[in-house]
Amino acid sequence: MKKRMLAVLLASVTACSLGGCAGKKKDTVQTVKIGLTLYDQYDTFISELVSWFNASASALEEETGTAINVEVVDAAGSQTTQNEQVKSLIEKGCDVICVNLVDRTEPTTITDMAEKNDVPIIFFNRELVAEDLERWEKLYYVGADAFGSGIIEGELAAETFQSDPKYDKNGDGICQYVVLEGEAGHQDAIVRTEYSVNTLVEKGVKAEKLGYAIANWKRAQAQTKMTTLLEEYGERIELILANNDDMALGAIDALKVSELPKDEWPIIVGIDGTDVGLGAIKNGEMAGTAYNDKEGQAEAMLKLAFVLSEKDPDSGLTLEDIPLQDEKYVRMPYYRVTLDNVEEYVEWSKKKPDGVGTTENTEITE
Ligand code: BGC
Image (cartoon, rainbow, N blue to C red; front, top):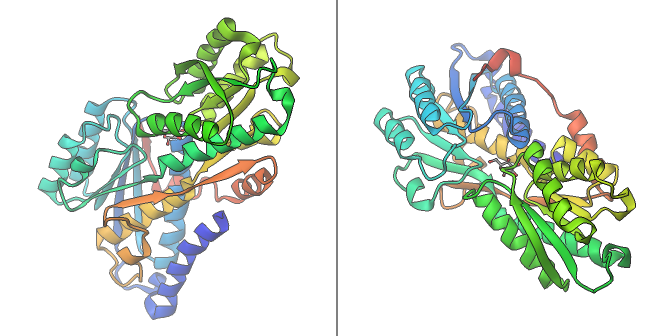
């Protein structure tokens, strides 16, 4: 799967080279300036996505001969800070700004500034409502199909529960579960919780919700919340549905310090396929995950930014190379990862060009 995604990027670039536009020989070197503002640079999934974005920017720069300058800033959870960062990125001359909104209901200040200065905005990962994206023609969204992740998670949970009677620890024919949820109001948290549980039931598992906790995507918060859930429900918990891998790992941290022997742990499923998440599948702690295609999202965002900058019209890259829906949305699918295929994903992450471009092209500012 990932090989296919990389092939897309390289193929489009090669097509350009074959068309005679190999950028290295350009007389005047253009610079595409792209700004990225993150809701929280310590979010595991976001930091892996940005790493891939930088690596892809270096590859595209190399192939087209057009300099790509990426500046990454961290809004550290403040929408006010993020608004100021966008203002400053516009003043610094960014051609395009990629915004990982802190508050997905508050895009107006950014949108207004962008429109006034005619700087296209690509929102990513934290989806604003459709009406807000319609407010100006140069607003885009890159993310994933949240429904797909919930469905895969529910399927993985059902398959594991049905695979061995030992998972029905009290033998009552019902799967007692808890949910660890991401931020309240985040599109992925809402949709993943609903679709994972619905799918579990559709797959023929009788299910009973014991409890839930909001852990805001964070491992440490999930550990604390899971410790409380364990105190309350103990070994009655047969399944933990986590809205992301980091929270699944927090649950594992809590289980490790609990009295519960490993062979009596509940089934744990996550979403993302982060490096640590894949590690937990490999060592049998997590039953599976829905792979959140950070490489596909990062590459689509980069190509879109490159085209929108209009700095290199001869590169061969056009809007047609980007899988846009309704001319504004890129939504990548999710993929199933279990012990059976985890090695493919681990192998791939080892190969990824870690850190390429991070020193030359990127500044991280708090
Ligand atoms: C990811 C989470 C991440 C969140 C941040 C979600 O799509 O699955 O891991 O924390 O985005 O917005």
